[in-house]
Structures are given as structure tokens and as C-alpha cells.
Length: 376
Image 1 (cartoon, helix red, strand yellow):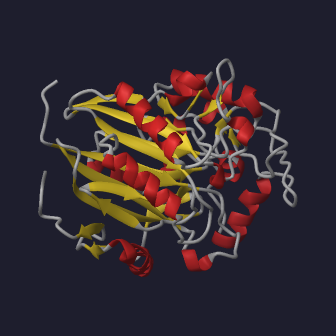
Image 2 (cartoon, helix red, strand yellow):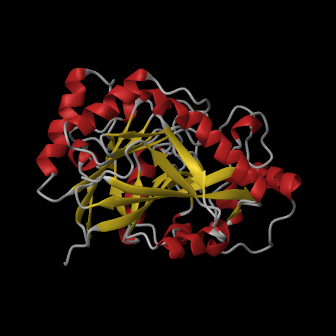
Image 3 (cartoon, helix red, strand yellow):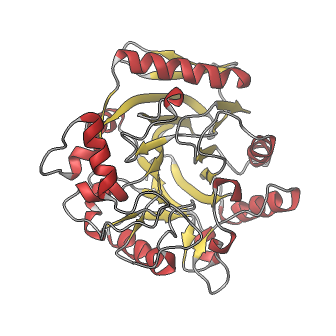
């Protein structure tokens, strides 16, 4: 395969197609829930309709992605990667360690293939919501759909292995990990002979070196690495020192070209470190939160599509971001007021990293940083 000098990727935060979304799609699981207050998944569908108006009687898989499909085609990313925070299963074995459980009917897998998703990150705090039977079915359904997986597997070895995509710039390795501070039960960690996810114990020196050594065992000359990490709380702009130190260590060791963080329900700050991109929190892309109040200051109805462009050495050439708005369970282009809101939010959260975002004429946002013009 002939190599090019640069390539564009698509990254997105949490995709939660369970609960209310699943109930709106052509196929749906039993709506029973085991949450403290909501016992039926259709309640989330009804709340969204009370808040935003009735949904169409028949919802297609295109409908959920809405305007994002056109945006994806315009950006022409060579790889499309999401964090899938939903078990794809009909399993009824809900995890007693969790209050919130997401699952999507396997026959709704077209909601992912319609957007040509290449890789699903599964190292997060929802993929085992319906137990190991639910994880096993999720792995099978995704594999049969031709979607690669990172961060979960039938044992520790498979969970820690990267998804490998061959592109015109060479191989792209995608590793998936999660951290306990994202609400992941310790018992979900994959072990020898036990299915689960790649779960860090902490961000200590020894564990960080173990991760570096593990990535080095796969990385070959010319490879590019995306390190996906599900970490931190759902709300708030604070970024722990341990997160920043861990991200820097991976870049210092030259084993990661993009740190792709998620867990927060809203976007967090963006850092450039030694020419490498660190996304501390991509925010949600798809969820069923319409009608749930309490966090309006974080603009939870706004989603972002991230389009980083990498050079051959793995350094960031540019990062363009497309703001979207979730309305009636569909991704729609954000209006001018929404764009101004997310523009201001990102600049506020990026300030501590000496980065900022500019608003372009086509309503995209573009990352700016010191020494942007220097390539290497």
C-alpha cells in the first residue's frame, strides 16, 4: 500500500445506544431496568419526547446519526473510532455492582455499520453491565459486523491487544484501557482465562512502564498509535495531575501519537505535548439524556466530531472539530448560538494548556497551539 504524507481520523466520545435509544430503534431488548428510580427504558424515550417533541413513528439507523453522516463524508477520515458504552446483547444477567445498565439489541448493529465505524473501544464502565455473557455476545456481534475491538476480550491477552488498521500512512494501532476513577468495578479486569477489559489499577510508575513495554511489544517502524483511555468523572472540567502525568509519560516514551480520553459527558480541555495530541475528555456523542436536567452549564446536548490529521511522524498537523446538537435522538448541526457556547467552553478549558480553538467560516472549530507551524 502506497503511503501518503498525512491522514485524517475520526474520533468520538461515548456512544450510548442502549436504554431509550434502543427502545426507539427497529429492534429492542426487554425494557426492564434496575436503576434506583427508573425501572423501564421507555421512560427515557418518553422524557425525550416531552422535552423535544415526538420522535418519528419509525426511526431508521440513519436517523440517529442525522447530519453527522454528511459531516463524516465531507471529512473523509480513513479510520472511524468510537467509545461504545453499550453492551450489544439480549443477556438478562445485569451487573449487581452497577446502578445504570446499558444494552442494545444485537439486531440494531446497523446503527454502527451505517456510520462505517471501524473500531469500537470497549474498555469502559458499561460494556459489562449485563455480565460476562453480555460481553461475550457483544464481542461476537461486533466481529460478525466487521468492526474491530480494542480494550476488551475473552482473556487478559486479547483485551490488551490493539486493534490494527492498515492505512495509506502505514499501520494504525489502537489500544484501549480504562481507569477505576471512571467508575469501573475492579472485578471487570480481564485475567488469564477470564473475560473482561484492560483496567489499570492506578497511574503509578511501575504500571505506566508496564503499559509502555506492552505497546512497544506491538509497535513496529512506521506505526502510529492511538491510546484510548476511559478515565475521570462524568461532570466537571478538572483534570487530575495523575492523568496529565500518565499521558506525558506515554508521549515521552514515544509509544503514543494521540491520547484519546473519554468518560466525561461533556468535552474537556485539549493539550498539545511535544507535537502530540491529548484529548482529556471527548464528551458524549450519542445518548438518551434529553429531558434530564441538572448540568445545563456543561451543554450536555452538544456533541463533537473530532477530525485529527496526522503527519507521517505522528505529529498533529491539524485538529478540526464539528459541533453537533442532540435533538429528538438525532445528531443535528449545531446552530450559531450552540457553536458560540461550545467555542467559549473549549477556550475556557484549553487555556491552562496554552491552546485555543478558532471558529472557521464553515462552522467548524480548529485547534490552535504554540509552535503550530513547526513540523517534525
